[in-house]
Length: 100
Image 1 (cartoon, rainbow, N blue to C red):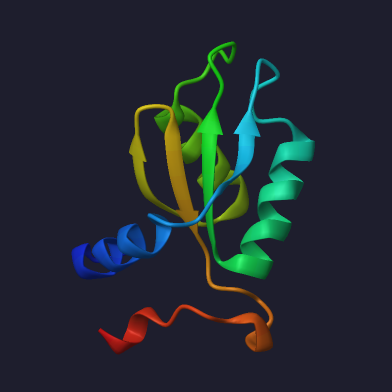
Image 2: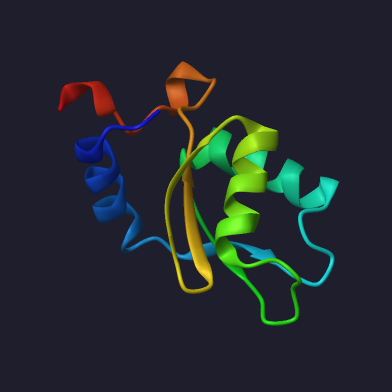
């Protein structure tokens, strides 16, 4: 669970990253889950977008992914969402929230 200070720091970091994940009409498929899992393991912070043809909104998609991957939802706004998870590989860790 993220604190408000940690969430604020992650929001700031997420501002400049590009959207890597897109959720379409198929929703949160196993392929999307695997793609998000790999991206989070490499980058720790990922921005996603829910396309207009999807049956889910950004909040639903973000929390469904967070539940399946065991990561944190940083925020959702409009059709976009940001997820965070500390990398399993210690060499790939870039974001240190314990330093707040």
